[in-house]
Image (cartoon, rainbow, N blue to C red; front, side, top):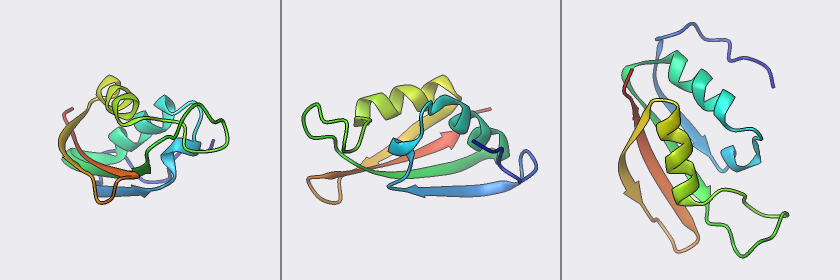
Length: 95
């Protein structure tokens, strides 16, 4: 994966819609996102809820995404469930 091209601490908000579940490993990207976010900037993440144990569909649960975000300095401040099969997390840069 290539590095994000924005300088550190310059982005107010990142919106990641139905994409993060495809990134393996996810940690390095979350670290880069946190780095480019301004202090107290936001990452908004919309993802599909995994169904069963399929490798073909979404690969990260709400709980798994929250844990990954916390590891990289992103604090989940809000959770939404627009429909049964989707979750949305609003996370803030705490560093």
